[in-house]
Image: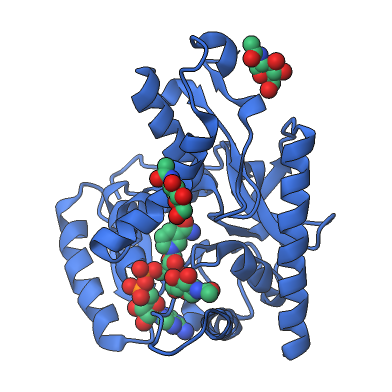
Length: 313
Ligand SMILES: NC(=O)c1ccc[n+]([C@@H]2O[C@H](COP(=O)([O-])OP(=O)(O)OC[C@H]3O[C@@H](n4cnc5c(N)ncnc54)[C@H](O)[C@@H]3O)[C@@H](O)[C@H]2O)c1
Ligand SMILES: *[C@@H]1O[C@H](CO)[C@@H](O)[C@H](O)[C@H]1NC(C)=O
Ligand SMILES: *[C@@H]1O[C@H](CO)[C@@H](O)[C@H](O)[C@H]1NC(C)=O
Ligand SMILES: *[C@@H]1O[C@H](CO)[C@@H](O)[C@H](O)[C@H]1NC(C)=O
């Protein structure tokens, strides 16, 4: 580090360095977000290959992040642990069987990291993200505010981009929260959508936006990317980098992030203030009765799944 650089020594671990974990590491190095990146994977050859390839990136970036291989236990001692471990669908496997396999991966990853450093922040990216964040939160032994999931952050970024393309307004001047359980039941809070703070339906000529089509396009986007190229590494990796720098720099950014909802007993996304301690505070969103009902229904469904899984273990 250069003299006079007061940035503190910081470590981020990435657990599961496949497509998404590898791309997340790349984004974190280009952004010089942390001093050191620790890469963890059960596939040792893949992990070591990623360490070498990404070290080449680190050597070429000013302010160089150190990249090294690590164990699960070492990962639990970092400032931030990003969990991107996952499993490919096997032929003949049902959806339920695959979900259980995903849950056992999360249990084994979190189990192998315990006990965590007391101020570690865990960021779950693996899907189904809200279910796996709920599981990680329960078994981590960390305070609830320190276990988060990427949730609907990427969906909010995406929808903002779609609106920018439609209206010619810069994405940075558009706010449109997507909240709830990531996936089919996520909810766009159109009543809170603004252009530079002005309600969006008052700022645009009538019928500029087809709300339902835009919400669908936002939901369908991941699937169409996976159909075309087999994974969606770049979008999410940029979101991971942004969440990690909000945390390490204690920036107070407001974003929709999956976290524990005491009223529902599971994790899903609502806008929060992000800082070094994780979720600093929830920011209320004005929901109309439809939006509220949709969120309540999908949260209850998620809670049922979480409870059923707990009974099985
Ligand atoms: N939340 C989002 O918005 C979002 C977006 C894109 C992808 N994802 C999710 O990210 C995850 C990763 O996707 P991918 O395309 O990189 O998959 P991938 O198969 O390329 O990588 C997963 C990696 O996890 C490793 N792994 C498995 N079990 C492990 C364990 N116990 N410990 C350490 N590593 C382990 C595997 O060896 C593999 O290298 C998936 O769950 C995917 O659905 C989420
Ligand atoms: C299981 O995880 C994979 C990736 O890790 C994800 O693509 C898939 O949607 C998940 N499936 C279920 C049913 O949880
Ligand atoms: C704009 O949206 C708000 C909140 O959804 C609604 O109350 C209002 O009637 C809408 N205005 C117009 C002009 O459509
Ligand atoms: C999204 O997918 C659904 C179901 O697969 C389909 O009915 C809908 O037309 C798609 N919407 C867009 C905008 O692509």
